[in-house]
Image: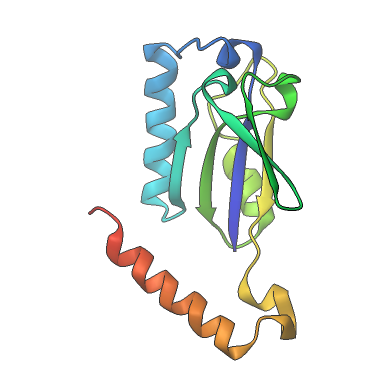
Length: 141
């Protein structure tokens, strides 16, 4: 199963404060362990919401809302995408992450094709498979 691991924003991350060398070193070790275990598929940190935008959809109307956005605890500061056996394995891994100071991490399973049942027709499944091949071919090595 794939799991999206969402690192919630904090007042410090929203202020654009960068982590120090010690935390970067610890996080590098943690990410290296994830790679060696074959779990890490992707992961990145995000700039503060002040550098972002949202687009609100209302029928055919599109409204752009520039950051920053309120409620820091509702914002995401970074993410990982992991391939794990189950949610319990993901929880055990995140418990080893070098966070402190009240950090909150959310783990969410990613939908898989079978989750959509009959609504994902054979034609749509074929399209998904074709897109996956195209996407893989475009990834920088």
